[in-house]
Image (tube, rainbow, N blue to C red; front, side, top):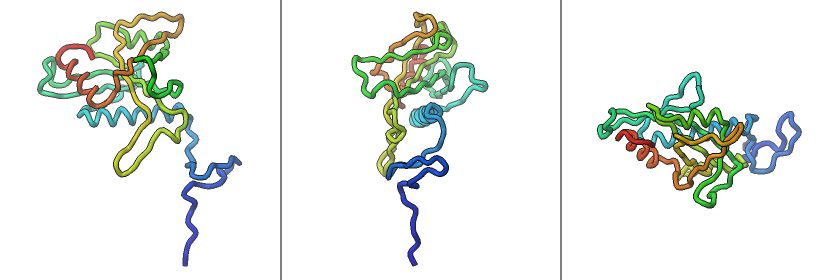
Length: 196
């Protein structure tokens, strides 16, 4: 006897909402898109840290910095383990492959002051993830790869001036892709007593 199988594209109608789902469109949860963006960027950071051999810790309570990333190596000269602080941001308002070598990103002045403070004992970086507007395009998985779209970029804002009344626009270089090699290079510089 054959049993009817559920449609792999999900139900034709979302229960209780009366909206018609497109065929082959998954029924996503009701979390706000911004909350999902935060979760996606944390997943990206975890993947990069794992590939770089780093450990992660999350400050509690959060005081304007999302994560501490630590890297242990005998080659470090300032300590056997060095740490940086990472502030994550995510946006779909900037398209992939920004032209011109950098893109603009706006921060609240109070947040910029925290990231721009100098000198510091523990360096800070800002990591900005660019994602497609549609969640359908964020992730693609197959036997050969797991792709997250689009990319994270990083910058060190130490010494950056506040220029706006309430918010300041900063420039994020597109040459600074945040991946495991970039994180290893950052940690090597900090481990030698330098800046990220």
